[in-house]
Image (tube, rainbow, N blue to C red; front, side):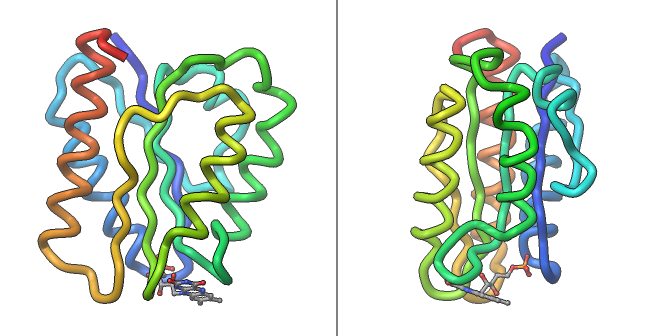
Length: 151
Ligand SMILES: Cc1cc2nc3c(=O)[nH]c(=O)nc-3n(C[C@H](O)[C@H](O)[C@H](O)COP(=O)(O)O)c2cc1C
């Protein structure tokens, strides 16, 4: 049984709804245990115990949210060198852009030697059923990749 950790922050509701959709998709895969935590609740032990990681953050001021940065700062040195090659994916709730949040997360997780396995899902403007479907597909595809051992 593989373990998938989903860690997210929301300042409102959008990224939380996206996280629910990612979780829903991931739970369609029976071979994977799915754990969902807010950034503030998650720490190095959660990441060390996970076979794969999906991160979710709003874009704030052209960057990931402060809470996501706090999570990554808290886990970085505790996990550096211990999670090399593990797969990750990302979803971002944004207004007009989202690219700054993607770049900022990718730079840090690359330092952790995590490997990107799916393109990020960026939810711009209003949350639509299409964005939620993309989140669900992300969760399902990522969990299937973990379960099948293709990552
Ligand atoms: C303080 C603040 C800064 C923001 N900065 C950006 C930004 O740089 N780029 C962008 O596309 N949206 C920006 N937004 C919009 C949010 O990313 C967007 O509303 C997002 O959906 C919020 O997700 P949440 O409801 O999960 O908190 C900002 C919102 C806030 C409150």
